Image (cartoon, rainbow, N blue to C red; front, side, top):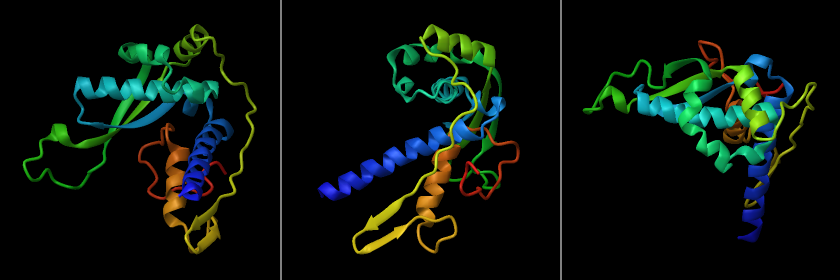
Length: 193
């Protein structure tokens, strides 16, 4: 059991590195100030919650400081997140699937893409005692050994094993980045290349 917990901890740490690497290595200025989150419905209450989640992600991407995740000062700004927004749009995660089983449109999941105003985010970071992480940012390579019982392998972009791990890493790396409409159906690997 102890070995399993250690592998999970290494995997989570790797995911965090990949998320930071994605924001750090290839993100242009526009991508740094944009984030994507999932909301249920397009109502004001759901949008406000999505803005708050996206704001936290953008603050971490722009500063490169993961300590801002869960920071009470950032959480206190959740109600003001909309005042930092430059633009937003939705993508129906169930596009092409008709409303069914008495599901109201408010119950439909949407990707909420949010772009924040860079000047306001930079000022917000300064108020938190942080600065924008300067460029050029370092590139991070991830080498992941998967051990699941007797099955062991190194995760590779073109390997026969590890499809789920590749997809999880790609999703984690993309977290917070706003893909252009329409979003690509197939992700690049590695996502920061």
